[in-house]
Structures are given as structure tokens and as C-alpha cells.
Image (cartoon, rainbow over the protein chains, first blue to last red):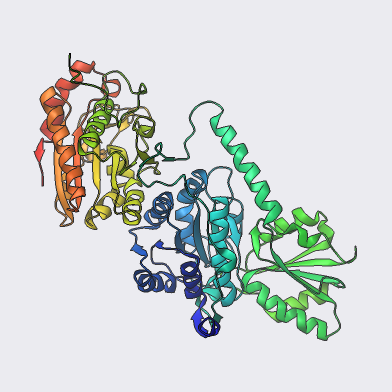
Length: 353
Length: 242
């Protein structure tokens, strides 16, 4: 127990890797791209120590399809990348969703579009939450805001992926990936993975052959499969919304931000409170399902929401779909490496009130 | 009377969707016979391609995975690494293996993955309507080379087996055909060799099979077999490449 309490100074990228290993991940395939390179490097060192498999793939496409194969064979499998690399993986993610395979994909976001730059950004929100590949599917999307939480959510991502046989994505930005903070490893009790995998490919000894596929050619089959997926997504939406709410009871202005942007918003919130401005915070932890329940208990009809993003109004759309009153929702965003500062948030709040 | 010929256990008792005179049915059966003879049906995991053989898993009676177009060897790499006790093979056409999947093919081979690859070369894309494949011959007319493949515009037929044979990680490369009963028997022997190599942990093995596509060659099934003998196998010589 004492060993567990020990603090480790570690980057967000490495904390995700460590969380994955503690969740039982034993297969990792990836391809180099900044700002997530610490993650595969860490996996290349740690995987052999735990009897797992590390492969540096020849491309992002190969990496995600290796994850498909590893998961089809019953392993807990993960890949990681950053924005342009995640775009390349979208086809594979769609196949993973279509084949009902559990897998974890990590996106340490950088600036875009195109090659963009390697500065932190949150511009892949749409891609992550609205099914970035082809077809009607969703990834579960989790957004950590600290190194400790990156570790915890990596474990949760595996748990949810296995529970729902669905791809789960960890969505963080280059700042969180690269920064170092103390990490306290926690026990795995709550995420004991005991899901039966009678669908996995193991060789058909003593049973009928298993087929892992997403192909439904006969008339009506694919529509029926899509309806099954939709039911499954409704269940996830009903059960898995997660968020952190601060000072929501009396708030006149509620900041809505996730990941790194939520950390900065928290600092702004405390400064505003000291100045006598009743600010609150909704920090979505699951971006899909989007935590609609956080917006149900709004304190007064006069309260306003300020959505703060390192992107140009992506999560804003989900807030607007939830609140359904344009007049109550304001926006502050920068992207391409620009990060809204505490001062900018405070200035915007004062302008609104 | 003794029964001397019957359906392999590894082949389901269903009819296939292939065109008359197509080689896929023969190749499927040869694999099933080899799997039965080696006694590995309950150990085998196949990876089906995207192409005419996309639903090969509906015909084989062992575990199978689909793979996105071209990614069969990435999927197979992971399955074999996760379950080294299984016998993993991919079944891929020329477009899947040598065009969209060239990268996965070369790198799985270069890593020396202990896998078996059955590569069906019929010099054309079948499933999508007879377009030019990387292995289409010069002068061959297809849906996308209506005047015949022109080296100036479309380059040359890609000899991927010869390319792969250069790599140190590759153990065995053999090109065979389905042109005659004798060639079919040789194909079966090559498939068996490629599976045995994997069972002996020898490394990457590939059998390229020249296979008829009467529909998109615009020839009768019989003429298609003659075309393999007289034309296709002149560009892609049969025999052991490595």
C-alpha cells in the first residue's frame, strides 16, 4: 500500500501509458509524431517488462489496424498519435466501431488544419465526438485535465471500451501531454476487467468458428446492425456522462471548458470569486457522451454560460444543443497554438455581465 | 466402395458467390485441404481481404477476421503476436496486397513476421468492375485502361513477389498457377509448404497464385486458362522465387 502512495514525477503522455498498463493493456502499436512521442517511447521500454507487445508500425494506418487485429485476438490494445496522425487512423477507428471491438486511441492534439504546428490545441473536438470516420458510430471520448487524471482516465477508457465493446478515445492536448506533474498510482479495484470475450479469435477449438467483421451485405442486415449500435449508444449516453461542476448553485456566469482550458478557467474562476463575481465551472470529463445533465440544474434563468476552447466554437455547438438558448451562451476561443489566458477569460466575463 | 474424395472439414457446405470459371473457389478449397491434412483447423485464424474474396469467412470453417482494404498484414501481424500458438494467414488479391496495401505487405515481410500469405494475382480488380490492377499486363484492356495499359501512362506490371524476395526477413516465395490440374497440385504443395514454415517458426512465407478471371478478361473459362499459360505466366514466371 505504501508503494502505491509513492509520488512519481511524470509527463502526461507517460501517465497515460502507465494507466493503460495498469488497466491491463498488453498491446501497443504507434508511429512517431510530436507532441506524443514520450508515450510510445515509454511503452517500448515498459511493454517487454510486463510481457506485452510493442510495435513501432510503418504508418498510422498500420498501427490502428494492428490494434484492430490485437483486439480481435482478445488483447487489450492501444495506439496513440497527434492530430494529423489521428486523421489517418479514422478509417481504422470506423472499422473497430463496426466490428464491435474494444480499443483505446489517444489523441494528444496539436494545431491544425493540415500539418499545422506542434503547439497545443483542442481543434479535433468535432472529429473525436462526431464520429471522425465514415458511418454512424461514436467513440467514447474522455478528456483529462491533469497528469493524475490522465492516468485515471486511461484506466477508465479501457474499462468502458471493454464494457461496451466500443473504441474509447483519450483527448488531451500537447500541453498536458508534455507537462510533468506528480502522479500517485491508484488501485485497480474499481476497473477489474472481467468481460467475457467469447467473440475473440483464438482458434475454433471446441466451438463454432468466430468471425470478426463489420460487413453486412444482405438487404436489411446493415440497417439492423446500425439500430443495434444506436441502442447501444443510447445506453452509453444514459449511463456514462461525467463532469466536474464547481460553484454551480449560485453562479451568474458558468465557464464551460475541458482539458487544459479547464485548468486555466479554474484559476480565472477563483480570481473572479475573490472579486465578488459569482462564477462557476462545468468541466466535461466525457466529451462523448456530452454531459447534458450538468446543464439541467441551472441556478437562475439569468445565468450565462461562457464556453472557453482552444478551438473556434466546436464544443460550443454541443453546449448550444443542450442549453437551446443562444442568448445565454457566450464564447471565447483561440486556436493554432493560441491559448486563452486567465486575463482574457476575466475580461470576457466582465464584458458579459 | 471406399469414399476417396469429399469436402474438406475446413470448408463449409455452402455455395460460393464467385463467377463461373473464377479461381477463388479452387484456391479456397486447396487451403481447406491443406488445413485438414496438417490437422490445424482449430488453430488457424484467417484474415480476409477487401476484394472478391471479402466474404471468404463465409466459406471456411475456422476463425476469421476481416481487414480494411490493404491492411490484412497489419491485422495478421497483431493477431499472430498476441496469439503465437495460432496459425495465421492472409488471403489477398493483387489490388489489396500490391496497391493499397503495399506498405503493410513490405513491412510485415521485412519484420519477418511468422505469417503465411496467399496472394491471388488475376491482373485485374474484380469486385469493383474490372479496373487496372498493379499486376495488369502492358496492353491489357480494363475498365480504366480502355486502350490497354500503357507503360508511359500507367507504368509496368508490379512483380511484388520478386521485390519481397529481396528482404532478409522473407523465408519462402513461390509463384504457381491454377491453369491445369498439375499446376493446381503444385499450388497445393506450395500452400502446404507455406503453412509448414509457419508451424516451424521459419518466418514470412508467400504463395502467389495466378488465377483466372474470365469475367474481366472477357474470355471463356477455358480460354482464360490458356491465357494464363500463354500470356500471364510469361510476364509472371512460375516457380520458386525464394
